[in-house]
Length: 367
Image (cartoon, rainbow, N blue to C red; front, side, top):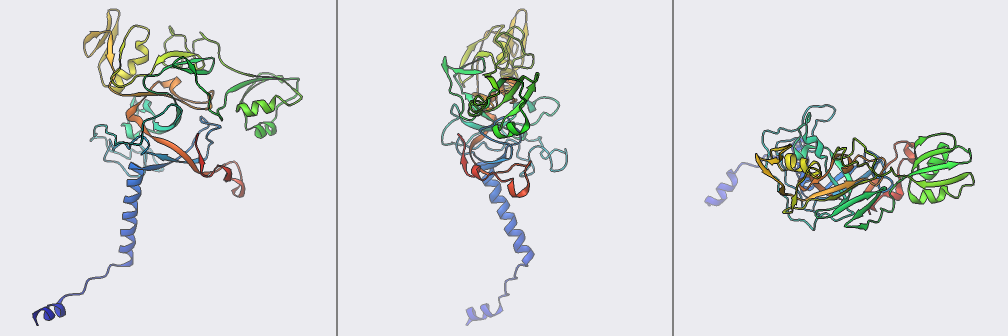
């Protein structure tokens, strides 16, 4: 009798409004999407031509964070789904008053030589931005050298551990073109998917294109020669890392460089110290000074250093139109975001709506 009485007196559950149900659905969907983005996969769109012809401007990629292990958030107080700034403004989308230590979850493996990798641009740690690691802008390049490698670039060709490294299939070198006076026009450039770097005279051009396009151009009757271009060795290029005139490096002739590996100890001298100074001072937080008396790290004179992290050398496949490690040096392990797997969509903004989609690139695996 008492049980039935309680059931009769119990108040009916208040039904949620339609607006409340929508809010709950959107909230939990956003939380789920955020978890996927932080720990599993992230979308990325190609903003520049530095990886052409492997990747094109307007390619939308799926980036796997489980390939190398997801990096846990370093800046926990930040607006979700933003990168450094709020949409439509230059205001910061994060608060760097709390910074957590770097930690990476177990992944399927490590970065392999030749992987196409998304990472945080390491130069944004400097003035005037001073951005935390996970709030630095995302870059995408190919890992051409990995920890422990000895890398040399000679006449635009990469050598790893004294072996010639195969060039990516769709990479785009520069070529010097000589014609019989016939002009190379925009129609031909479009047909070859080539870019005009410079026109010296009506006879001489510098183009960027794939090796397949270069081979096709050689068949044209008015083309006298098509030669791959590289700067001469020993010609100093001031904006090339590590910006030291004594080394006399340029974008096509650089090294040899030993790529630092965690636990590796190297002997420092006046010639190689500029190569590793940024790692020691900025990425591994030491006080560094070099005088005529020698090298001082944290106040102690030394000629050796043991690295605390792995480092990588990243380069674009469009070798003469890419801002990469040749211009700012190594990428630290804690800046790695994930591996680019495939394009899920590709659009060409120069085309009309009905022709802008590159259907042949949809779900194309990245090599």
